[in-house]
Image (cartoon, rainbow, N blue to C red; front, side, top):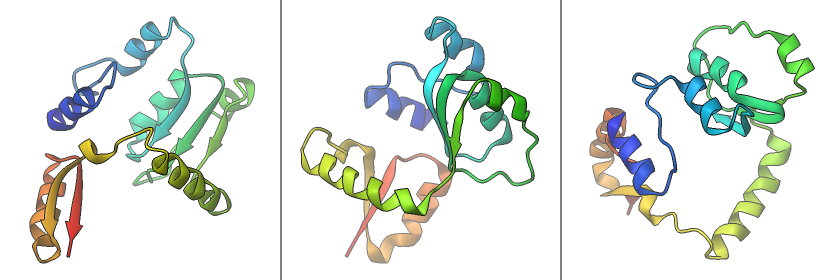
Length: 145
């Protein structure tokens, strides 16, 4: 949505794309000189987004699919094999390793996540936070005691 596109730009994204207004695959390929991207993180579960992610991934690229589609998805496995993609979902074994790496990275002070938190609510106001989250007009919402 427009709120989150604006937030991404404000937080430093070089390019923000609205799939309702922009040709995603074409724009990404133009901005990568036809090479595609190294990594795709797909978190929506939207079937079109998953397929577009495969189209913009460079040969040998890595794809993490974390969103869950609402129905089975047909994917051309030959594309994955011949372009030697690595595709993964959530992996519990790696999750703990990633957690420790992320904790160290955040503790280093090299990144400030505070700007991503756009709203704070007391725990008793969780319903207000849920409504805001469902509207999409927020970044991350923090609930506190």
